[in-house]
Image (cartoon, rainbow, N blue to C red; front, side, top):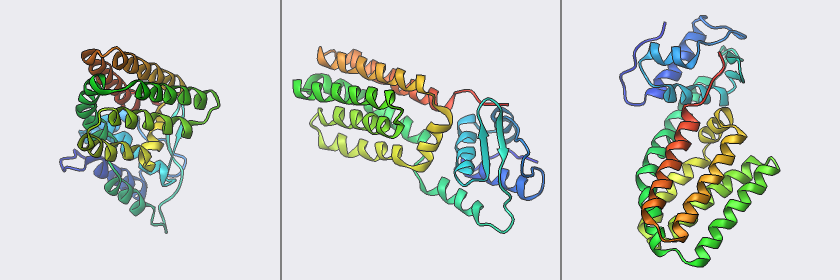
Length: 238
């Protein structure tokens, strides 16, 4: 039923295979899909890519994720254009996995440079964003939390006073605003993970404040590695 994927945009091909399985009647409305691990093995790709595909299918309303249980077919494709919406979403929006990898490569250096150039005012602004994240989390306002999270990283790169660095990082941060990114976070990230994010932000600020570039870089590297693991390596139902 499922085949090994060899082309570049593997999440698109994964979504196509799932769509074909539904259209062909292998999975009907109410049926449960195999676990992510099984799908990944059958298609010969990583679980993160399967997660991208499943999330896009859920955004389109074709699939439904049931926490602690698994993923189910929610809607028939007959007489709809939903499959084109899914493929367009995966092809046109920024890739969350690639964005995280690129950020990890860039922001380690940003943290190191910020430890050299950040002013007291910069430090205070960074701390304010951490507090804003705490308030948002306590109020259950995930959208406000994500805004504070994005602003923290943007303020950090601005503290480097390097326009080229900011111009490079900004598009990567904008990927956090896409439907696919937000849906993946909603599907896989828990509130406890967001609390860890705030603690990691604080560790970065503390290292920057004492001008410890090596520690700041290490904290940032660990933060983004952990963010990737939380988003792409969490548990699933089924």
